[in-house]
Amino acid sequence: SLLDSLTFDWETFALPGEAMVLKDVRVEGLELYPAALVIESVSARSGARASPASIDRDISRLYGSDLFQGVTYRLEKGSDEVVLTFEVTEKPPMRIGFGVRYDLDYQLSAAIDLFSRRFLGPRSEWFFRALVGNATNVELGMRQPLGGKHLMLSTEGQYFSQPRLIFDSGQRT
Image (cartoon, rainbow, N blue to C red; front, side, top):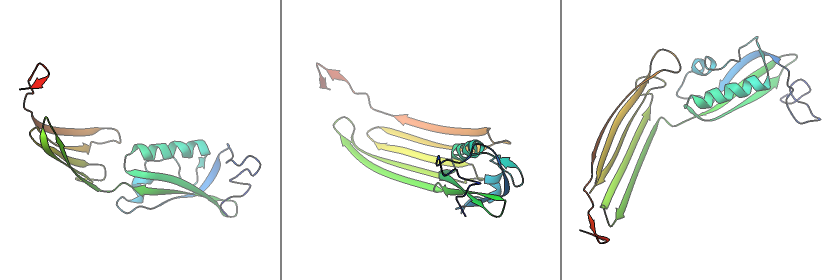
């Protein structure tokens, strides 16, 4: 059962503050990333003690990885054992955006935004952004993790061109 006296206090409608021993730690909802990537990112381990506070920190850590747009957990009790399941929703591996705008100063402009995850590995990404019209801005870049969890190599190039707007007595010349 999901909610019982071991994992839930029915009087206060809260999880108990004390730690519980986990029989197993599982991950559901993965399509792009291996479960080992999530398991190595959290402190919860099979056979170890975990409290609601430590599980909340694990949830924050998973959100902080920027790989998931949704992370929750479920506690299930067997006979005397508790199974912790992280339920994740991955961010899409690619994002494509396009827009058009018109204004009196720069007239017609078009924007495109391309973004892809898993370019060279699980946490690598690349992007291309462009605004083309009377003003032009083009960006191209990539980010790649180095070694540990918190070190990234980032490289980016940018080109920008914009006509000068000259005004005389409040009128554009």
